[in-house]
Length: 85
Image (cartoon, rainbow, N blue to C red; front, side, top):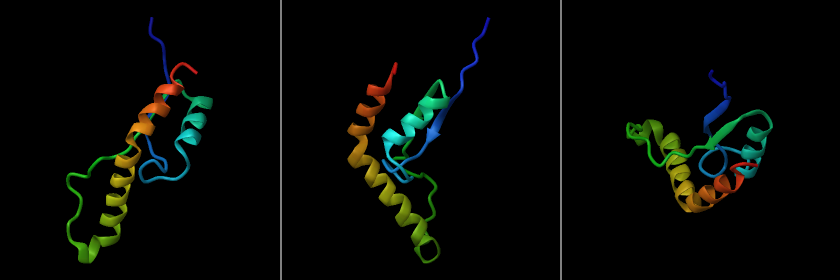
């Protein structure tokens, strides 16, 4: 017999380049999902390089990568604290 679980493995928040806090993302997921992960991206391997056209996109994502790097330990801590709750 198999069990069906609902979850989200790709969720963004302000820990990288989304909106809302990690706590908000985890609490919302907890209300309706069996599992979740707040996902940040450390890089975009094929990110455009033409700054004349894509500067805003490049800067937005680079700032998100830097924000995630600064908050990585906190993200791990928060997700670990939520296990089993």
